[in-house]
Picture 1 (cartoon, helix red, strand yellow):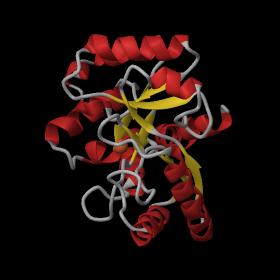
Picture 2 (cartoon, protein in one colour):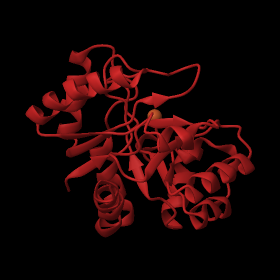
Picture 3 (cartoon, protein in one colour):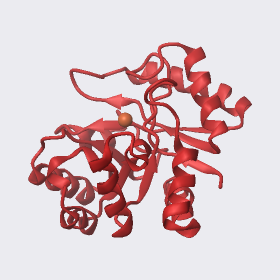
Length: 235
Ligand SMILES: [Fe+2]
């Protein structure tokens, strides 16, 4: 399988991802070894914490795109937006990028946010023509019940979990939760959310092999190949 990673932090000097171009290259090389051939890089946008200028993001992206191409990876630009009231305006005005120029927007919440908060953002984004992808849903206390996830999906949201959570690196309870999500067929994307080559490293190939064994190849293909391709098709 040629994998596509839709959530990771590989652009140097823009957020808490790599601080040097050389580290970014190592992340790309490791991703390639894992079987990843396309990556949507998603630098953080979080007011008062991560607010890199778009000039800086684009400079970093354009530089890394050439390096990625030499390695054999097609790079695309996205953004991980922490929930904030300006998010729809930013996307509409193109102040921040959607996922590879599509209608998909990767949105992150706080672990303690009430379910109502998630629902309000999903409603706002969907009614404005965007397709929200809820980033690492396994972190949110209000999403512990499968019914809540189903409700968000019914409203038009997509669900993303991190590969580390599926593999059990974030604890047994989280692993069990992810297994429940997979069995209930509530996951749209699994991504690395890689930041570095030490602790939050590229692990998508390892996770795809695990999911293939556990859920079968057709399921793994849908999660790691077909669904990410749909983002790239929907400009
Ligand atoms: Fe992230």
